[in-house]
Image (cartoon, rainbow, N blue to C red; front, side):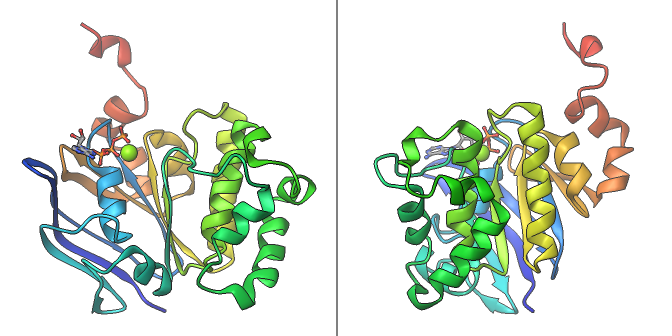
Length: 241
Ligand SMILES: Nc1ncnc2c1ncn2[C@@H]1O[C@H](COP(=O)(O)OP(=O)(O)OP(=O)(O)O)[C@@H](O)[C@H]1O
Ligand SMILES: [Mg+2]
């Protein structure tokens, strides 16, 4: 089973260097959380791994082979799938049509994979003939996750699954991450909600301004005073001027 190894990754948008030498690994079956404030470079890191942005320098290795700079569909074919921030589902298409789009590289396996996704999210099965645009926010997030899982990834890149969801639904997204891991897929989980992510992650990294500021086991980061103050909402009153 491959491992992901990101080594001194640098990614820029023109003059704006968004990721400044990030190194991280995701081992088989691990959930690794990538935390950090707005603009820290979390999404940019995921997009570079997924082949949507070309690294300016550094390495992205998957099972020891360089994948940095490969096109997005070739990265998917290697077993790495991204569920993007903001649930880019197609509202005028049905739930099932949206899911089948995710299986474009594996049309023959699609019906078996579809059953697995419906098993993970029974509500998507109930609503499989509904237009995706009529789903609630939580259901749309499930659909976005389900569509990315249709590619049968061995590494799942998940960007802000709890964004905009009520706390009870955000908790359910973390249960989903646990279930995805239980089925044998490693997860690199981007979250602004650090306390939520640290409940499910094995390890975590904190990005600040494009660099790794802290890294450690999820348990260690939960106990880290800096993380507690900056990301777990403690002593926020003291921090407000
Ligand atoms: N398309 C773009 N063009 C120019 N700059 C960008 C673009 N996308 C992101 N940036 C900049 O790159 C930096 C990192 O952005 P990124 O989206 O990776 O952050 P993030 O950690 O995902 O933040 P958020 O929590 O808000 O999603 C920010 O300074 C952002 O303004
Ligand atoms: Mg982002």
